[in-house]
Structure formats: C-alpha cells, structure tokens
Length: 342
Image (cartoon, rainbow, N blue to C red; front, top):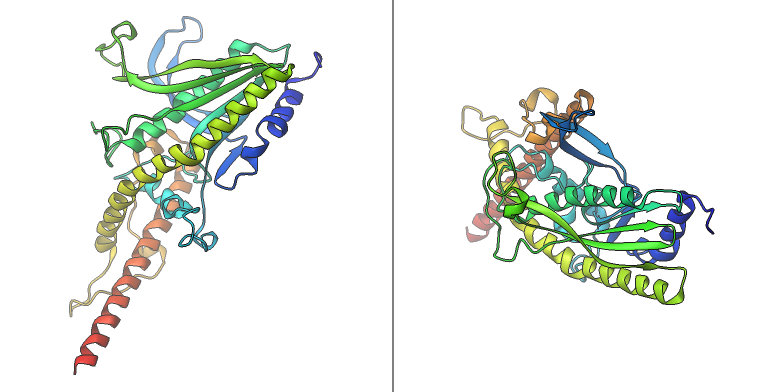
C-alpha cells in the first residue's frame, strides 16, 4: 500500500469514496478543465508584473451540477429533476451574450459541468501534500468567483453589482485532498477583505476567498474511513438540496435578463418591409449582424474566440427563430378568436 502511485490512490477514491456521487444523475463528477485569467509574476523575483495570463488547469476531480438538453426533460412537470434553468442552450446564451457574460462552466464557453461545488486533488506518499492543498484551493477560489458572479444582480461583471438577496453571499465550495491514506476536507467561502489582508489597498479586490479545514484523518482505519464517508454523504446531500436550489433560484433572474437582451438584439436584426410587416430572417450568415462577444473572450486565443463567435451567432439565430414562432402563434390565436366572434 505504501508504494502505490498517485493514480492508484485517485482511482480508489473515485470508486470507493465518490461512487454514490458518480451514480447521482443530478450531479456530475469529472476530470474537468478550468480556465482562469490570473495576474502574472516574474519567475525570478516572484513580483507581479502588472500583466495577466490565461491558464488552463485540470484538477483530479471536479464536482458540479448536471445540465440537460430539452429532449431529456420529459419528467419535468411531474418531478422538478431537470430544471429548465439548467438547460445547456440557455446557459450558453448567458455566457455568450455581451450584456451577461455569466460563466457557469469553469471551462469557458462550455455548459457541461456547471457551478462546481467541490474539487479533489490526490497525491501519493511520495508526493507533496502542500502542493495538493494549493492546487485544490486555487481551483476552489475560481469556483467561488463563479458563484459570486451568479449571486449578484444580472449585469456586466466589471460593474459594481449588489447581491440579489440579503442571503445571496452564503455559498461555499469544498476542497478535498488526499496524501496517500491521509485526507483533508476544507470548506471555502468569500468574505470582505480584512485589514490584515490589505483591505482598501489600490488594486486589491474587496472580497477574498478563504479556506478552512473542517476534518482530517487517515482512512486506513475503520473509524477514519467511516468518518470520511459520512462527511462525503453530507456534502452530497448539501449539493443536491441547498446548493442546487441556490443556483436555480439565482439563475431565474439571469435568464430573464438574458431573454430581454436577446429580444432586443433580435428586433435589431429583423427586417421590416414597406408595409411594416416583420419578415422572418433565415438562418444565413448574411442575415446575422456582427455579434459582439462578452468580456472574458478577450483572454482566449484566436481559434477559441472564433468558435465562441460562431456559437454566439447560433444563439442569436435561435432567439430570432423563437421570437418569430411566438409572434406567429400569437397572431394565429388572435385571428382565430376574432373569427369566433364574427
């Protein structure tokens, strides 16, 4: 056991510790990439250079909420399992509209594993437990910023925005690390920067992420293994109930804001004939105007930016089609009602 590699410890954790989470359809666990725009520092002096760099990192395991396509929500009316707020196409619209720019998937531009609530990093006995904790907390801090953006009033991320409700700041992310058979469980949250954390200093954020250890122990004993499994079950229950409800409740305001924004863009994109009747735009490239991208697209490379622009155009075309179908349905019902009265 003492000579097991890091991969062996990680594989055991996936099957023995996180098995119930993997089988839960409302949650998703994957070796998932996350992106971040971090301050750059000099490799020799370790001082900040004033520049920022785009990074891609992949934790050993990331835990988030499942998303759905419309055809997978047949039981939505009987049981609110697959919420409409977690449709992939709607979340992509939130991420790609310049008036929203809400990133739900830590891999920017995607909507597969959304709003992460935990991260796991593993090291073997020959590894460095401090590096595992640093990696997990670094990913957890990125996830906390995603939730912080979600919890605020819809709008551009660069603007000063208040929280949607007095309790909207009450969210957290769990960071789990293992060093061989020794495990640590930490919980991270955001709070106002304290004086000893350089509060009020120019260039420093007003809020900061903090991680605190809530449990540690070795799972090579029956007691230690039982304590870890009980704690994992409690975290899973939190993700299924409190956390998922928190996300869906705050997403509703974002979807309303996004729908209004796309309606505005659709009206600008539609053509009007001489009689004042609105024509339907075909899904052709020439009928789709130049689509601006959200602020976070400034930090990705050229091919990724082109891919995001095509996705944004598809979202605009879909919004135009939906608006046209709504108007056609309304006109049909209106003239049917008029005919019944004659």
